[in-house]
Length: 400
Image (tube, rainbow, N blue to C red):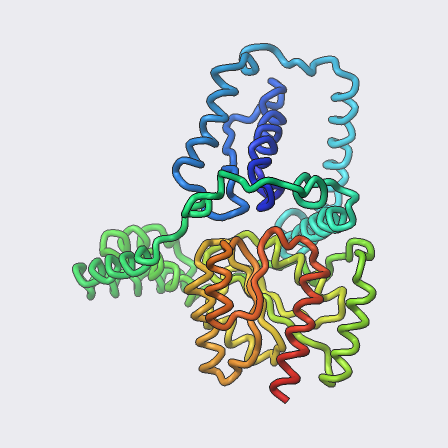
């Protein structure tokens, strides 16, 4: 199941959303999923705790064992309404497949950024509808009055915070592993792997030899990376069409134009996703809206290192760095980026962060030098960018 529709605001509502999503793939016997994986109620807040994961599992078990949904024939058989909707969906899917065939197939559609572009545009339309109120999201743009949620009242804020000692412990274990193995055998196995890759030979046997020699997956991947290079998938941002004309965008464009005149060039924003987090929706939508507002946007996709982000900020001459972090590692990653910017002599470039970040961590980040922190409750992209314009304006005036 998709956790895209879960909300940080009134997170208790997410339980109902998850149940409704599940019913879509269990009610119909002929269209039933073979396996179901449900998000936890608090995935818009952070990492689910073991108890939250159990709650999600229990929801599946209740539907499976306390109802008869899985025992009867398809209840939608003969439904004119359902059959008409299915026919509509099939026609749309066949049309999309025909367009992909015209591009040369799925691989060509990925490489040309068509698929990613369509995803980015679809989500842009969704967010624009939420911003305008055309699409109602309970607790976000409607029915926002609320009593404090007891689910988030605990000391942990309702989510599983990463253990700061976990990284150090893992590094220590990795170091001990490398120290205990036969270093020469590991080097020889990696060399054989690289040679096989360079010659276009089957890399399975040298990969098995690497495993027996104690080579780590990181070392194995780096050996292949040295031969093949590193693939970075298209982001889909560059050619994505704007989703209408959201409220306030005209005024924001005028403000960006004014800033550009003072700077002598367009304000430039670098968006980076450090760490292993692969959820790029937020960064993509900020990139598209920033482009539509008149920013020059530098965005190369997911899984960048802090070193790569800082180097890009230096080379591109950006006015602001935006980090998107949903992995819970916002503290160390932000500190690393800030330190590297300072090392490059561009420590005055403001850094803003968007992601799943608890309030107390947001205050720590600001105290450490982060200019602003945005979380899922900040769904108005135009307002976020208006804020960033003011941050850039103030920062460049102070540096002048």
